[in-house]
Image (tube, rainbow, N blue to C red; front, side, top):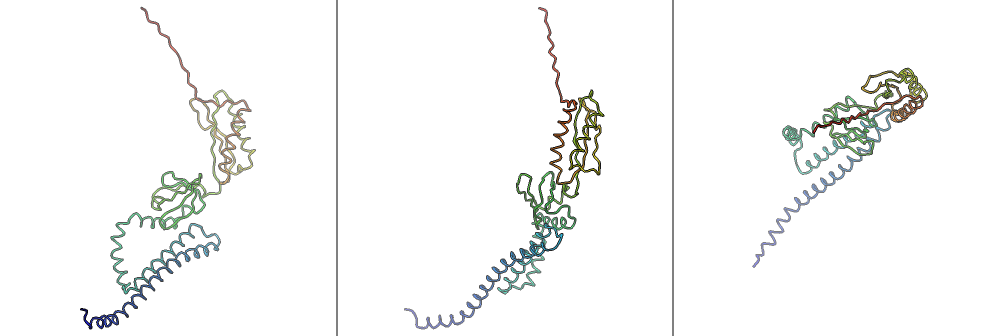
Length: 283
């Protein structure tokens, strides 16, 4: 049989627990609200930072995304500290503990942290910017789209997206094809040893002079570059604007071939001579 004192004890305990439930319930609700608002605001702050930096003249797009990510992660860190404070966690001592544990975590995450450090170094030395076509990490080529805290995003000429860790890019030579306003193009055309070299040089110079995209300074150069096994290698060297490189390369290569044909100059190709030797045997 249930004692008559049990309901009284339950009511007394409820009176003592109710303030604690209300207090912790309010702490949990406020902590959840801070977390949701902090995450939302971090994304909003990132967008606002990028938008504000876009208004600055001559401010690199790569730096816009980098500082936007930096603002976002900073707000998230402070949000987490505020949430922990709502549960009574001493954030000052927590920061000290995290600092002590940071060494162990850093050793475990050397690759990740090195990507952050490499991203900072890439921003300081600026081997490329957004929109540059580069070749990085042993031959990976593409147009720079974004540099973030951990990775760099490129788009290849055939529209493939490549995401590379910053550490790999920083550890290897970076070949930037877009850094200078002008580029040089070398086209090698082989002619037969019996052909007139002077005539070939004049023909190549005329081909270069008729293309308006070829720069006059530095002046185009046509010369003998090498004496091959079966041909005299002629070099046509021209300069053009960076954006015109591939169209000029394709057009001049075709024009050089057609001009050699029109001038009656032979472009040799490797040939193989086969001899059949018949042997007779005496029976």
